[in-house]
Length: 495
Image 1 (cartoon, rainbow, N blue to C red):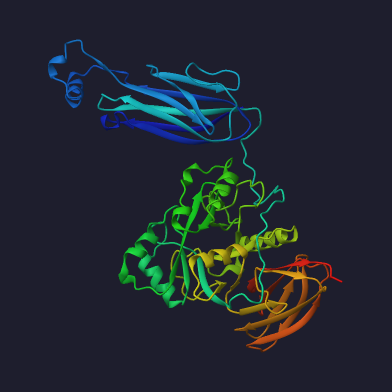
Image 2 (tube, rainbow, N blue to C red; image 1 turned 180 degrees about the horizontal axis):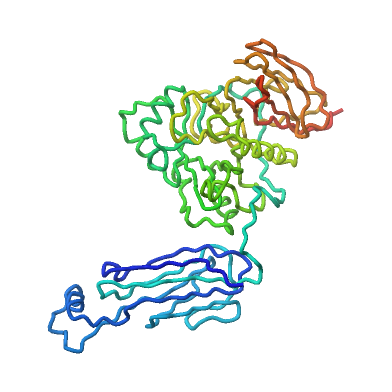
């Protein structure tokens, strides 16, 4: 089966002389051959005035031009596959065909396996002496498999279990913690938002946000602007961030500025695991953004289509996205899959991001509330995010402690088989319901009738629980708050 992978007509002028035109094209798996059709013209330029201008441009004297003088335009094709250089065709011809397969290739090119990933097809303009040169390059792939219809992607399908165990230990001597309000996902006019950096910061101040991550698409220039303009006079602190907005999914990276910058155009379906691994070597925080959103053609690249081997290098999944997140079916899908990953044994955090592009007056806003030490630093914040020391809420305030001092994101060493729970929830409304879950499902539910504040302490027998987490539902049974887990390690009682 012959597939057209790419087609481009081009028109270049003399300004393209000695330039490279690079076309980076995704080549799918299961191809047995690549074929390139390349045409351009004119090859020979005979117009005396055009030749005269070319001669002068090159610093030569007009006396070199004779009655029969002509010049040749020379455009050549080079090819790189994801593994490296495949060859070049330095050849004068208006019509060229280049073929590469596992066993043979056109002269100038190296035969070999057709690797999945981004290939580069480079038109090198050795000589452009005509006023205008036109042409076309078309790339075909030959496949033994019918690839005419693209199957709908299912995020996180086919994962092999694998994770890096994080140190979640905490003792009662640790310094007291405090709760800070965060927004992890926001945009400015430096990408596709309608708000300037100054307007975003001003609104964040009004909303009493303590830490704001500006995560423009594939750029950090708004962060640079925010630091360079003292007139912003901001109280909100900035967390370095970026949203990598690729063809097959979006992901947020938070961390030191020099550690979060990569060339997003080099990310493809075949190298995502390696990209994540390299990023994590720099100790950044990685969140898969809105994985179950509608993708092409409705939201370009928004749906997560990458086939990850596992989630070893992923810190969080954005299960709430937008200002009123509990009313979104794609958020419900993400939340459900997060709880299924917890059930499978993944210790992965749930994240929330407004995906803040403009003001949304009158809508309910979900914030991330992060547990950090007093006088927290950016490093403290990143560490807390990686451990999931956070809860997400539209309204209620949650305080959840196990065995006197273990809080969200901690691991409890349970020797007795019984757990002491202390739960306090503020900002309640009539009809709110409190729920506590283990990795396997609902453990306890209680309606909080007419109570603005609710607090309770109770003992819970450990029936094989590896984690505990809390949700709050409103009168309409909409989820308005939820926590990341407190993890539990059951050990045998000594003696």
